Length: 131
Image 1 (cartoon, rainbow, N blue to C red):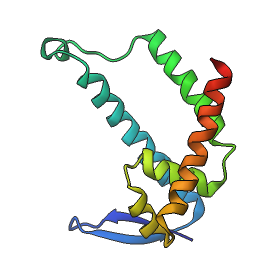
Image 2 (cartoon, helix red, strand yellow; image 1 turned 180 degrees about the vertical axis):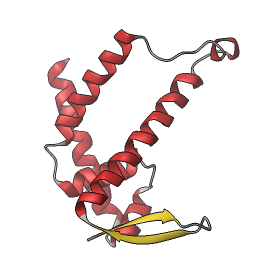
Image 3 (cartoon, one colour; image 1 turned 60 degrees about the vertical axis):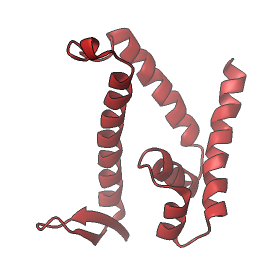
């Protein structure tokens, strides 16, 4: 069983136990939502005020290129252990600090840092090969 944090009807955060299948769906949904918001913020942050009013998103070519990069990175990350992937996603996709992840998982901050750095090293190694 997995535990997720959700808001109840009164807006209070509560812990709910769910199956592995539900947990995976929940996490994917959070990632997609967060990534869409993050992507929009980054694109808009680079625009002038006048450009924001006419901004419609990336071109088709930019979108295809971005999707290809995402798939390459995802395939690299998929070679990592579940522990490494979870900590990497919690840090970079959900914005948790290494300390917060350590507290959440009941481990030390250096062990979280090591897992995250292992994933980053695999990505860097791949980038060096392709340059």
